Image: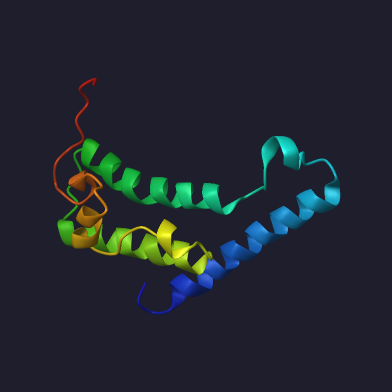
Length: 120
C-alpha cells in the first residue's frame, strides 16, 4: 500500500477502537477490574502478530507459496499498522528478516518452510 491508503485505513481502525472504548465506558456495564481495558494495546498488538505471522504460516501450511520478499513486505506492513495504531516501539514487529533474527524469533515466518506439526 504505497499509495498512502495504509495510514488512512489504520486511522479509521484506530477511531473504531477508540469508539468501542468510549461506548463501554459510557455503558457502565464493562467490568474494568475483571476484564481490563477494552481493545487494549496489548491485545491489539497480539492481534497484529496473529494477522501477520500466523497468516503467512497458514498459507504455507495450505501449500501456498509465499516468497521471502512477499513475506517481508507483509510483515513490514503490519509493523506500520501497529505503529499507526500507537503501539510502543518495543512492541512493533521487526521490519526486516535481519531484525527478526536479532529478536531471537524463529525465522519460519520468513522462510518457505512449513511449520513443524510434531509435538514437543
